[in-house]
Length: 457
Ligand SMILES: Cc1ncc(COP(=O)(O)O)c(C=O)c1O
Image 1 (cartoon, rainbow, N blue to C red):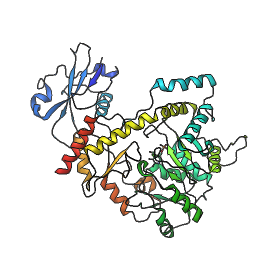
Image 2: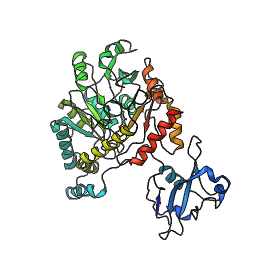
Image 3: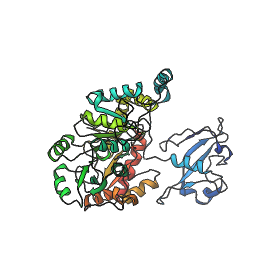
Image 4: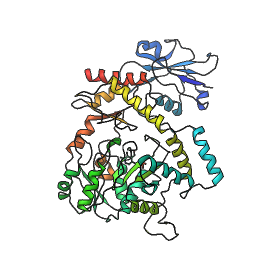
């Protein structure tokens, strides 16, 4: 039975192993390098990576070795006759420094809320926990509870907010190409055709001041606009309120990652509560707007069109948050202040060990004015593929969260688009590095040292 897995000092992450199939695996039976297999042949190529305890007395411990020489993707050294199941392989993959490691509140913090569900025997349909969660969210953002509407996820929230603004099906929805594909799906589900336009090079978001020109170039009537808060960076909601008031065009802001930067305005703003976000419930989201009619519209459309009575008032779906998700939401809010401080600490460590310069940039205000669950760096003038490769060789995961841009997904092929030079530059010049609230200083140092070394060559 495998009892645990520990990194050699200063490297890797301690990881719990549950007994399972791995019982049957035969790994290295002793620590000594060069004892057998590939090590004897190329001992210098490999370094100890993980120490796996299979018995409490250490008699059956073994080490997993990692190839030392850079070979673009990290390779793992196992004894030639070792049987390693896919699951074990996955576990070793997980042992690298992952791009993210979500951490929702522990069971004991959720338990009191779960017990409340046992007592109420109300499991969904805007039960007491959802209503009190909405109240707490409203207090957090300094608005009335009628200005917050929870939903099953942000994708549905975006669609329902568009619908609640009575967008005209068949018209175009102006969208930045620099977004996650969920924004596109949300517009399509609202009956709109996405029209991809470019973002501002400084904000990485749509610029309301350039919107009239963009709309003038649109190949068909524009029925809505969906600005996206890039990776949680604040959006100028007041500017969009103003734009909406001047033009009458419905606007819904996709602030999926923007819990910490969201500012209430008349324009609906949709936040995700997915487990990967800065505050999570598993799957969930909410719409925030001072326009209470929009929240009523979202609430009805998330509940078969019912609003108080059992007559369905509009084409709708079922996108309610369950009481169980609200239970996690309450526990997440309970620990939000501490969690935020942890996230900020990790961001500060990155900024200290890898200071901002003309060659390395963090998103403006990241870790100081606002925080999110991803750390996206831009490397103007550097080859990010080379940096990603060097990090991968060191067992460090990177990600391009938005791939080549939302417009290049096969599902977007039919949708019209404008010239996208800024998006194309961002695709090449940005890279996400590991970021989670309990990322240790040793790991931050390893990531930053590796980036620096890659940029020096
Ligand atoms: C920009 C953007 N919009 C929408 C979504 C979808 O959020 P959800 O998973 O809550 O549907 C995401 C998810 O990461 C996102 O990044």
